[in-house]
Image 1 (cartoon, one colour):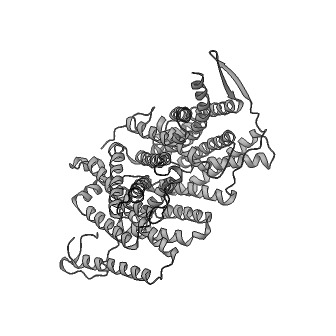
Image 2: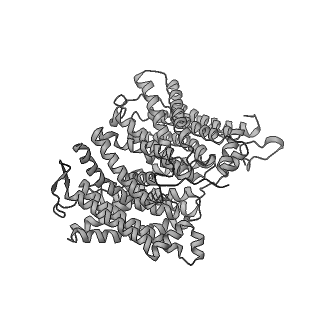
Image 3: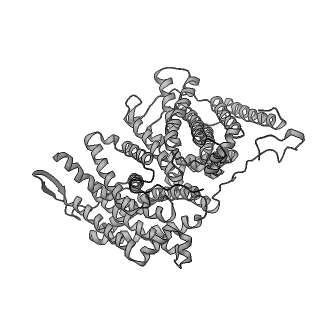
Length: 297
Length: 317
């Protein structure tokens, strides 16, 4: 039982990173129905911006978060304007291919500029201590890093909920995702709203990137691929296009994955995650929190 | 297959290409590097044409073609390397196993549409890779090494022509028309009495079958197969060929497969820069010509062969 709860704690901190990434996927999907394959690589860029801010500009980790968020947002908006905007009325497949192409570009561009070296954040930028926890008489441990990850994620999510539900921009985002044409008629600047969505999603990815870098203690140019795919799976499991769905899916996937590697084999982790994805798609194609829409003729 | 003038001309052309390269190879005028790219070209054509049947003609976005290729490659390699069976049997078994995988993945997931199907097939490819990683009999993550080199130019060319022939004829049959109808409007097709699930699974099975052949040829040319040979990027590479050539154009797929193989060969020395150029090229093509090189048009000889009577064949449109 204690072992099980320990896995849950480990799973929740990994899952909260997935949830942060999944939010970006789900917001972009919700607004332009595009699987932004480059999202995982924006995460990588964010992690590197944070790394350079800490190592070369000697800033503390909080400034690194802010600079990485700003840099990633800018990148997200540029990508959207250059690659996705011209394809707004093209076949869906064309946009999807462009997204995968953008992902390849960022990965290989990253390899070219940064090399294949694996780097890690300098030690001591964050205090990482084992904290004993006692729950119902059971001795468990959590590290301060795990708690930090969880705390940062919860704060980011509360901020996002506030933006989406209580600000003008958030209302515009919801309107555009509901019906872009009607939103345009109501005087909403659809292009700007889409850009803001990309900026927000990318900022979240940057935070997730730095957290991932701290969690695994490595950053490298291809670090975004697997977490990106997994977070996308999380978004689909929760119900793509839904913000609460992304959070639920992220946490669920993190815990599930930790369980599989803890109780079975870490080699089976990735295939099992995708088997779970296919099962969920079959049983509830719209995701756990999604409603099934019947297609009208 | 009718023996119209056009079909005979195509046959003559196909034979000419075969003997031309065969004699060049016999005379030792094809370097090792050229031969590798020639083989890759043929394998890519098989893959692109078979994926086009699924994505371009039936309209089902699939991102797991490398998974089918992996099934074919592993099954065929087990047969020749471990069980010492003849190559032809291995190719057939590999293709059938891949087709079976196509049916297994197709039956349940084809209820999904568009992006969801794409993700499910992507997941399927990852599952195959992950499973191959965990089976020690087939080498696990290290893969299978020392597969006999049985793929020759003759085998490759034969299989390539067979693929194109079968798929073009399928597309021109009632079944192929049903597939195109599903692409254009699934609900309307169903209303017209087309069993959409049957045709979608059929297209999946045929596409997977030929991907399995490509996998078998690949395994027996490069000695070595590993789970990482068949990643999502391999699937994506094939999809790029299909989209670049034009969804719904067989000749487009062939031209694009050839062009992309040659571009890859030409940029070989540039290492990472090659992938950067490739990615930029891809984005530029998509942004400026999202329908691909050929759209849904076919490149036909009709333009150059004077039409007389029933001489115009059935393949063009």
